[in-house]
Image 1 (cartoon, one colour):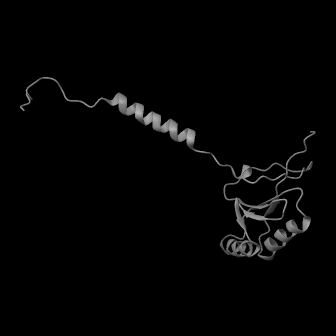
Image 2 (cartoon, helix red, strand yellow):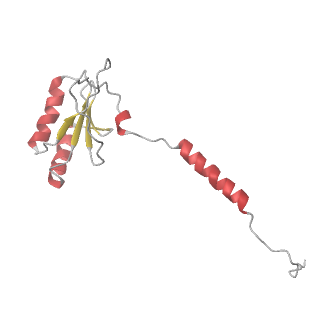
Image 3 (spheres, rainbow, N blue to C red):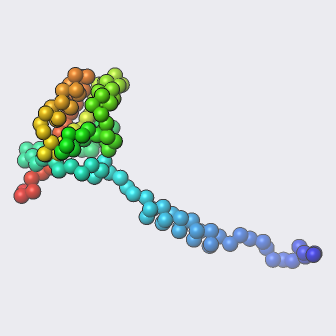
Length: 138
């Protein structure tokens, strides 16, 4: 089979279908990707505080969570008491000024929150904050 290449028609790639496919892939990934926020991962009912101060969000913040049963979380990852101590010891060696936020459910026994505060203080991590929410009636 012979092809006549002397023909004046130019060979070109049609870009419209390629652009359509790229946009469809972009839309698919945008829709299927979940944007996770650390604040919404743990189902905690935070205590109310009238005198709380709003602070700016910090990127290098370590979040320790305590649910109503007293289970500990490093971010959203469950952690044991021994694991918490090991991670805090490593963290204290790397950055003793690391900011730590404690998210404790309002129904958790106070001794669990005090235990986390004691472990942080033992390793010299004093830049601590307790996460609360504003009162509902204000």
